[in-house]
Image 1 (cartoon, one colour):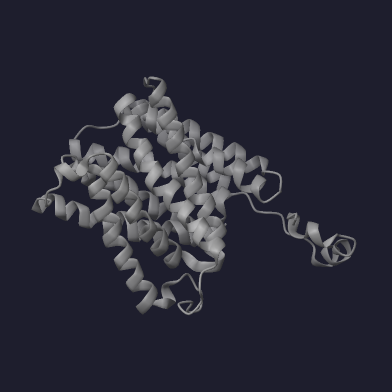
Image 2 (cartoon, rainbow, N blue to C red):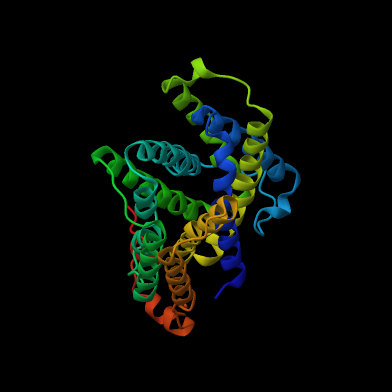
Length: 319
């Protein structure tokens, strides 16, 4: 078990979950405009880290002289469009046509989706133990959120948010080995800014533009620094260390953290069912983190590698 990776993924989800209370302070501010400001500030901070603190780049050597390829730009744009912009728009739409319990339960299925899709996209069979563990995490998440209602558009938006959540980690997993956590975070946030700005214009928020109040500005700054810069770096670094399947299970930490944060803020203890759900999530995480990926015998790998056609090496088909 990679303890550092587990702690980083947990930290990222704790920051995200505890930010729910802070997000209440910007409910009256134009939503997409606020997201534009948040990601613009985060992108500027991350760009400074790339430029002046290259050793933070998850153990990578300084890469500021390496030019990104067309594939890198395509994947980064896809990450920003799906995992940041589309995810937020789908969540906002879902909350207008479904209650929070339904949204949380559907999006909470992300660990199971990542446990299945992560290996399949690499051309390998999903590990049964990880799929079981992810399923337990999803069940615990559903218990925390409880049941809810939604109309047809609400359900479509919920599953759109789920797709965005899954895409966020899948696209990042492809990029992290080449670019590192800092650069992936910086470029994806930078690309998200014009996308959010365009979405704000389409939504008619230009007519409601105003400067944020002092409380709103403080909340947006917190969301930019902690929820975006700190949480993204923690999550992406942990994701690279654990792999997308195991890291995905830690999404189950989010509802537990949000529940605890809301309980402290509102002075309302969680229900018995919600407490049981948190324990179920913890059990799923314990099972998943006890799984160890199989280690290939190097001598056998050399023998087996000879007859493999070049186009099938590493389980990837070219052409």
